[in-house]
Length: 74
Length: 556
Image (cartoon, rainbow over all chains, first blue to last red):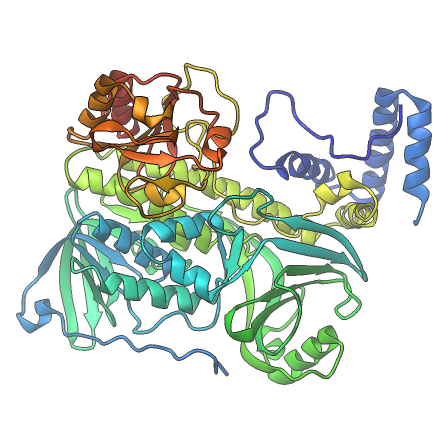
């Protein structure tokens, strides 16, 4: 399976009438996760988040592709 | 400054209350002749209601202010007879482009679907909108406008609200059965009544400049994150009518408004942005901050709040005037039914329910845009720049770029006025949905668009393939719906033919109504006077329609 870079966010059972809504729902939740944290704490939250999501994805070839893209251009 | 527009001066007329030394009583008084007050006044007057509109000034909006009018607001203005002028004078656009530093990372099209009458958005200076609305208001003999009338006191009892109004000839007292408050974000009347509005102020300042220049940029919305000519901040460029361009520079909270407004400080910013020596003239400059807040309830006894007086959002997304115009659209038919004794006053609670829901949605979307455009923490800025960096090559990241989610109408899916679906439908035209437009040919002539035939009363859309073949008994039952205290007009939607008994027939020439409303022969929709779906069925059932009208008017 290749890394999916198309829009893919949704919440089960939720009806969306606007294409931008699911992405904005996610982004707000992501930023809220960091509310009132120090930069150091935020870095730790991000690291833990990546580890949790990586395990959920499981397929290491997909993760390698994502890691490569993430590193490009930084 | 302000060379492209000639400001009208509206005549002050000494009110009869002062001339005759008495108090005055009116069934409905609207305070504030901005876009929202005027829209509400015109809507009520168009329904035959006698209306008094008062304003403390005697001209239109100073400066361009609200410049983006969305498709849904234009559809409301069409219903009120001003949409055509707006679109003819305004600059229609659908495409927005977003740049990060020097690269374009994202573009969007507000109206990717064909066969809608109105564009996604037009840009037009607010003073034109107000000018057109005043002209329209003057055509309505039962709508009286009084300028230079400043409300200095308001009280309300169980049955009337009482206003103390100051004019150039002194003060007088007016009473009214219903008071509609459209006196803007600072709403003096809200303060006089001791009512709260809650929310938050955003710690940022923006410089807004209207510039007159000849430029060959396309009519698109251009938004820059961190451009080389204005590092670490955002910039927005928009074209308006008369070669006026709106430029919006983010300044940061530390900026001094008075210093920033000085031409010697504004002009270099614009020159850096234009990047050449083209000639331009500054027409209007302002520095603003903003708040996102709303009143808990928009209706308080005899007093109803509309527009900025009831709720405010950040300007990203053009959700201010556009939502205010939709407030008027939602309120006017409800208030008229209550005033006519055809619906209980609880119908006005649904104005708060529905428009409060819309206000929450507007505040949520504009707050999200604000948080993306002006990140509040280092990690938030890192995520924002990561999204912008990925957006050029990866579609998922483009969807996350938020330079303003432009005003679109709310779907009132949880409104108590809806009759829930008992039958199965696909598509978005659910009960509570703002109704989609489509091209039509009408047996009666007139508009070539569906929405041109919708609004101002309850209506049934009944679909058959061949209108000639509509059974006479069905035609009779449909026609009989008009004969009720709250009449229901019938529109037969068909592929061909003309319905018997003189029922208005709309031919679905492009099959867009069929597709957008998921029509099958027999499908019947009930539309509210504000062009929202109230109910729908797979078969025509007059009793079900009457019950749905009762439900949609709090008469159930």
